[in-house]
Image (cartoon, rainbow, N blue to C red; front, side, top):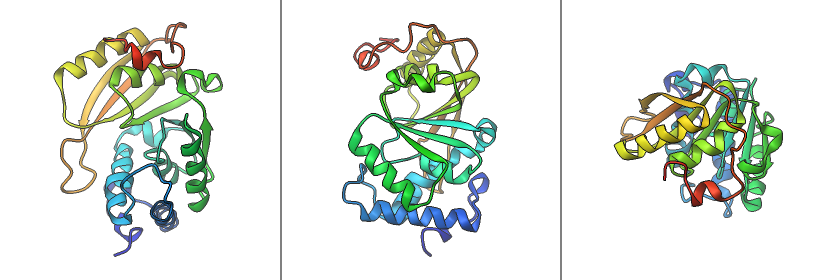
Length: 232
């Protein structure tokens, strides 16, 4: 079974034939590009660990309904590229600060003809054009949660949703996230256990909603969120 065929039957992540072709081309490009910023390049493994892990967010109604999506710290393109394929009517911004990764993302999108995904080569703290525009912000394997929240909150519109991919649940880390969220106008709505493929373990989607306007002092200048996390 090739990579595109094996995307059949994944519940809310089920794709059309044309979308499966796009996935197959993206996986082939990932495997062939020696500069891909990920150690997972084998198509079958990347399908599971990258694509299916990304598409699990389609279980969330705000993600399925989103028209403007930002993938914060897009890196190798997941979840942003996979969800752009699944949501062809949405405009997806792949926000990445490292130029080498930006160049890779452009090659990846071109290989899969992912025309609704747009690479933004900028730091989250400095991308003023994206302020308060996104229906949904995505973050996967990016940074400690207080840092992710500070990056994402200013980019969300009122009542916008942040989906933060996390592994094993940790009480202290979640409390730190809640404290940071309260400072940023966000509220955690749920922590959903994710099962993107049968033997997946310890995967969770942390879902936040923007319930108040983010104070104007956020985000702080570039680099400060990582050096001095809000809940630290």
